[in-house]
Image 1: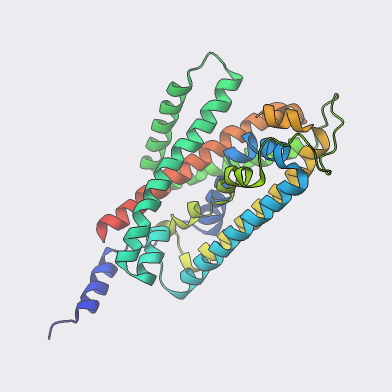
Image 2 (image 1 turned 120 degrees about the vertical axis):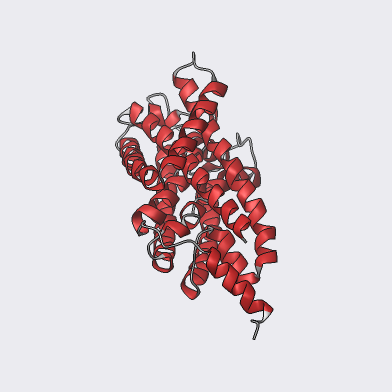
Length: 310
């Protein structure tokens, strides 16, 4: 007796599912998600955000952005704990919950967005590197970095994840250096009050900052490489969102107390000047941008592969 059409579809989808991976919560979800959250926008554009909308405006933007991300994380956790999750990340969850047709309509733009986001992070890395070494060509740096991380991701996912542990350590060092730094000598401006020199409105600044909190997909997209996706995805995602929120709520207070609004807007690497060890900020910038690019370049092909299998 032949199987009903729905059962045949389910059997084919099950056959296409990948085998369980080897990554745990910390390495497979928390680390890539947090490193993507604490990325290029935090180091190169956060001062611009504070300088334009002030301290209170920045705290509102951070809270509103994180709240949107948190609601998304709740949906991800609900799906991950309610059904078996295989390779394909968000596309797999959507397609198995709402159907292949809806999943494809979301999955293809998601793949394109993940692929193009590599350019955002690589440009951020190249911009910061050329600012320190002006004799370098930004286009050549960007092309070289893209090829390097592509080969690294192609060689081994586990090796790529292990390199992210060192990048995480560099980011922690850079943040500690910023915390124990000192204000600019010539600065004596309090950003707690409203200012008349605001150059951009609330919503344009919100639009620039919001991508900084969307890094939770970096961990979700590695679902096929996890030992226990149902446990690792919710736990790692919530921890990453929480840690990112604490960092993003602390940094504006530090910047507002140490730098005036005009300098914050005009100097993308202002954190380097007010840190205890300025070069530590450069390590953080380079590590954050590279790790974010790696997270995207690992996630996009997995989404594409699952769509192709379906």
